[in-house]
Image (cartoon, rainbow, N blue to C red; front, side, top):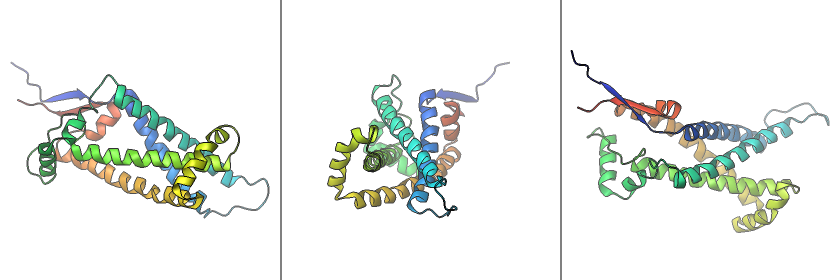
Length: 222
């Protein structure tokens, strides 16, 4: 009797990428929640000099912000210099008109999706756009941090903060755009989760499981 392999496992994401993905997701959730509270303290605590509720919220916001800065730098390094080129290969599809047509047709249930790397062209461009938003949020957040905390790291960043705030036209526009771009995170998260689940159902791939286990399990080709 012969045995037939029905499913195969492809190694997709390294432990570093998976850990940073979930740390980045957690930091963004914390930043959104605490950011809205800092902008509008809707929970009014009792009065008194020993009440540090706003201070604790700001502390969580700062920690999550610095985690996001660190992960952004680390992910940029891994993209360009990691031994695995599965993310870099995805750029080939971005430059291919045929790959765009294939992906858009597959989303309309016309044919299957074939990718040179781990992301399709639409995914790659979307993730790049979100990454640029993250970079802006990190830069504007550091500028706002230096504007409030003038010692230590804040003091070291103050020359950059002055330049950035001047470039943006003042402190108020920096705060306003920092708030507006928060909605990009919210909208992207909803769409990202939906598309990850939908792609798993549409293309019979465990795209959600891959970012947890590192492996993509799918039916074997015969």
